[in-house]
Image (tube, rainbow, N blue to C red; front, side):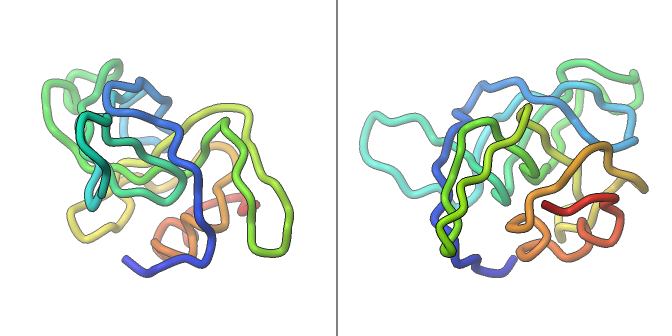
Length: 132
C-alpha cells in the first residue's frame, strides 16, 4: 500500500452500507473497520477513497455471504480536493473486494475508479475500465 499525495475527506463511517462494484457475487457490503485509522477519542472510524477496510457482505450470493472480507473504497459521494485544485465527487459510494495483499478478487469493475485508488493499489487499475 503506497502513500498518495491527496488528503481525502473521510466520508464513510463504520456501519455504512455501500455497493460492491466488481463481479465477485457481492451486491452490497457493510464496513466493519478501517485499517490504519487514527482518530480521537469517541469518534467513529471513517473511510475514504483508496482506504483498506474490513467488511461483511450485506446482500449477494450465498457463497460470499456470512463471511468477513477485505475491500478497497474506489468511489465516494463526498467531494475531495486534488493537489492541482480539482474537486472530485462520484455518483455513489463503491468498493471492490480484495485479498489480504490488496489484489482484486474479481475480474472486472463496473463504473469509474478514482485515480487515488489506482495509485495505491495498482492491481485494481489493471482490471478497471475507466480511471477518473
